[in-house]
Image 1 (spheres, rainbow, N blue to C red):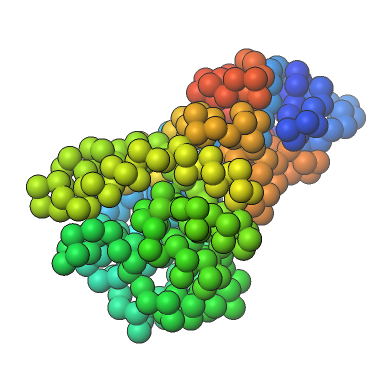
Image 2 (cartoon, rainbow, N blue to C red):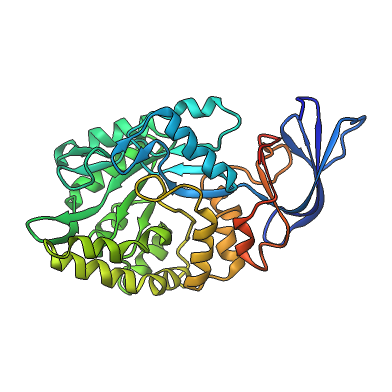
Length: 363
C-alpha cells in the first residue's frame, strides 16, 4: 500500500464495548470517520475491528538468560505484532530497545526500564541488584530511562527462609515510590506471595504484576486505592512445573507455589468483583514465547470475567490505562480485523484476519 493510498475498513468497528460503527478510513496512517475527498487508490478490508491488542506485561529484548541480540528482539516484537498485539508494556528488560521506536512496522512499546531487585533475590542477568539504601537512586535512574513506568521486584525466594518473602523494608519502598512519582513515573512490582502487598499498596504503588498472593484482607485495600493488577495467568500456569523442579531443595516454597496456582482463578475473579482494575499481560520474553495476548484474554474469561470485560482488559481499557489511543478520530491506525464478533467468543482473537499498524496492512 503506497503512502498516498487510502484504506477503507468496513464491517463492525468496535470503537468501545458498546460503540459500534460501520466503517472507518485510514488516511496518512491515521483514522478518520469521514470519507476522504477525491480518494482514488483505495484498498478495502472487511470484518470485526478492534484497536490493536495490548500485552501489558511482556519483555522484548529478554530471554531466560538475559539480554538478547537485536535480531532476536525483532522476532519477539514481530511475533506479538502478527498475533495482533500492537501496544506492549515492557515490564523490565536489560536491553535497550529504543531502536524499535524508529520502526513503523513494529509494535509500540511503553517501557519500565530495567527490573530493580534486591541483591541475589531475582533471576541472574535480568535486574539491577541493589540494597535498600540504593533503591531510590536506581528508581530515579529507571524513571528517567523508561516511558513513565518503573519495575520493582517486590518478592522472591529467600534461600535462608526457603520460601517467598518481601524484598524491601517499608521505608525503602515508600521513599522509592515517592521519588518515581516526583519524576512523573508510575511504579509496578513483581509479587507472587502475600506478605509484600500491604506495604507496597500503602506506600503508593500503582500496579502489581501477577498478584497471586491477594487475599480477603488485601483485596479491599487494592480496590480502595485503585491499584491495578496484571495477573499473567498464562505464566501462573507454569507454577506446578516450577514447584516440581525446586521441591527437593525448597519444599516449603514448592508447596506455596502450588497453593498460589490452585487458587489463581478465584483470586482474579475476587479481585475483579471487588472493582480492582485487571489488565492483560503474558510475561512473554523470559521463559514464555511472545504472541500470547489472545490466550491471556481467554484465561481471564476462564477465571470468571465477563467476556466483554476480559476483552476490554486487553483493548479499550488497557489503552486508556497506558495513556494510548484506541480507534479515535485522528489516532494512529493500529487495529486488528477478525472474522466474527470477539465479544461473543474471545477465542476469535487467536486468528486475526488482518493486522494494520500505523495505517499499513502488515499481516
